[in-house]
Length: 482
Ligand code: ADP
Image 1 (spheres, rainbow, N blue to C red):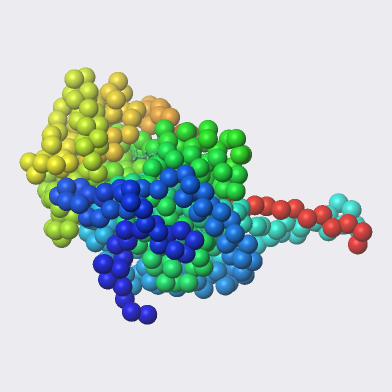
Image 2: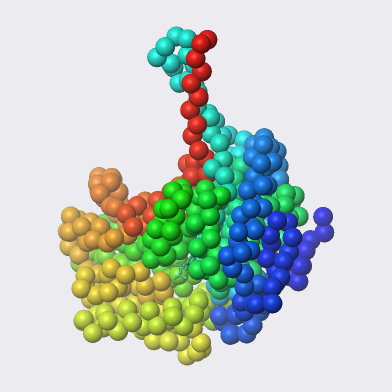
């Protein structure tokens, strides 16, 4: 097929039952780096959501009846198309979200890797044969698609967070109604354009944009929806859980994090500084696995702060479309206010601003890469997710104490630590309360490993051989009279 261009992929309509539909009421999409209007998308509500759910329910009858291999062929085609169009998809992503173009390209490749992975997993949905307790019986387990899935995704990874849900759902034989974040719907709609080109049948994938409360209300209360998969804040996750309770839906929740990053006294300091930079400053600190709290051993504290300062000071801030830029703007004014509030609270309680601390001279929602030292557990930044380019550095002197500080959080998503002591690797990895642990690395996400949290960071896993189970029901067959 011919490669599609920017104009073909920036869709200003929603994808519902294989049709592109519009509406007079619009959501306007801005480029956070410039404030310019990029496009507008329909502002739809409960009625259109109901239609999309009905379409997905109907389409599910034929989609689930295909063999895993047949679904795999279509998903593979979709993966190929995403890769073929990755440059344009990355441009759209940077324009609507602000992250540097290199990060946007990495996100497209990362999201696509889930489509590839689950296209392969579609062929490997195994059942089981259980040895029976009676000789005239045979006991079997089969796995079947959950049914209609509602996916609600955030703005910080507008392409990958959706791909990470769509790929396993479609591979399992589920159909989907997805609602992207209102700030960043264009990446989601562009994925749908390519899904349509790949031959995903009408009604199997529906993307609906508009009022989150109305759409979310219908998605959670409609009994035809069998599962909610959500990535976003813990606060909205709790709300969706409550709303889903009446119809007892299955749920996967990938919620907030408050990742600790511990540097022990025996760590490779330069490697730890590189890992710190990668895990903190990616996406301007706006990822749920970004480090929120650095704990550095007393003996190496000053050296770590000095080395990190040198690296962070060199970060180039600006419009992500400029290839030199390493940190884009924050998503919106509310994000900047939260960062400012965390910094001023910390400073009022004795933190020292080592670097940055203010809005960037570029204006808008640009913020200076910031480092705070002398940070203590009494500060807001210790317990709340900042979601910005601020590295608060705590001091510690004992392993037991730092593990207990790291665990003093309602969240349990990602965590990181640096040490060269193999005994400590095991002790700390086992003691830390997190769904994911990076040991001597600040970057851990990959489609082949299970991504997800514990505690109030949610439940369910995305990616890996475990990921497809979130979209499958287990059915037990007892055959008697043999
Ligand atoms: P953030 O604070 O990072 O924007 P949110 O949890 O508010 O995170 O948003 C994540 C997703 O949840 C977005 O798609 C948003 O539109 C959606 N959302 C927000 N409020 C609701 C709601 N009441 N019902 C359903 N979805 C919602």
